[in-house]
Image (tube, rainbow, N blue to C red; front, side, top):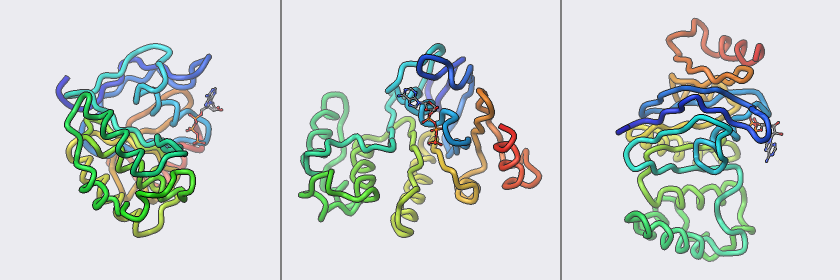
Length: 220
Ligand SMILES: Nc1ncnc2c1ncn2[C@@H]1O[C@H](COP(=O)(O)OP(=O)(O)OP(=O)(O)O)[C@@H](O)[C@H]1O
């Protein structure tokens, strides 16, 4: 497979199946994952990212199979400074790719003042910025972002939305949110969790998108 991401009869869960079997092929662009609390969105993204093993089925990612994942908790060591963390990830990334230069990441994510601070002392939004810099060390083939815009100030949210649009021109980007207005602003492509199924829906299939999405979630 050269581009996109394919889910092939994927079943995710812990001891028991939460979602699936899911079979989908997603191309470049933003795909918003929508579902009620506790339905398995995080579990699905962690499984696609390779952090959790699938109960069955498989995930295929295009090109070199590089997946960028932003979770609820940053993939950064709490006891180390932002700079120590980024240097660690930079060295690790060098084992399999040519990572971006740390100075350019520091500039892009406005991390200059955060570099000497320990991760445990950062606010949620600051941590997320540092984690996004970590995730941007290499150009991903697939991005999975779990509620990335929640908790960001309006300026940072604007920056991240622009960055997400930019990324999604080059790879599929799956992200979760509980805000329907935000989802509708970001994309025409939705992944709806309904019972154990995950259904791909395009805005052109919906007469009244916000009301129809809400109804679909209420009936889920
Ligand atoms: N490590 C775990 N072990 C066992 N069960 C878990 C674990 N993590 C989550 N669960 C359960 O799996 C179910 C789905 O959780 P998940 O976090 O994937 O849902 P979600 O759709 O992302 O929820 P939310 O919208 O509230 O963030 C929940 O019932 C949760 O209690």
